[in-house]
Amino acid sequence: MERIWAPWRLEYIKSADELSGCVFCRALEGDDEEMLVVHRGKRAFALLNKFPYTSGHLMVAPERHIGDYGELDDEEAVEIHRLTQAAIGALDGLYAPQGYNLGWNLGRVAGAGVVDHVHQHVVPRWAGDTNFMPVLADVKVLPEHLAETRRRVAESWPEA
Image 1: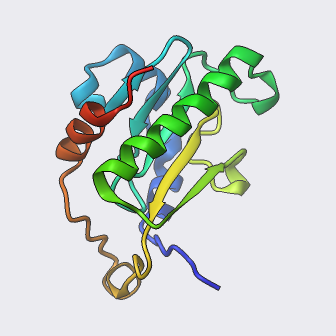
Image 2: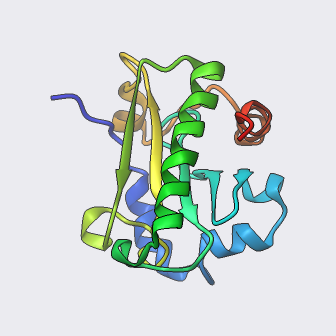
């Protein structure tokens, strides 16, 4: 069984309640570069994860602040799906990953660091992308700065 080891995320999950306000709502109100937003749609948007598992790890969320997946309306659900497809297209062109993990962490026990604003993760994967650094040294090695990743993904986002 393959695993993505990210022991440093536990610290983030434990401290998530200490953050003021919703990270997704703050991203919508803030500067795209500072908040790592790569694309804004009509009812949903995509942004890089500040605590990525791999380079290019991003999230797609509705603009509306909702915590229950079942509350997504049809237009939001379709746009999230389409933005996820576009994210994969942009990441394919930039990083040529060999696969993806797509997922929703619904609820704290399911690993959600943000429980009150639903979002889907798009995690590019490569053979051998896990290594000893996070496990032995509690260090995550990313080959590219998040600001550069944001710029590249935003510029590579397919036109609708």
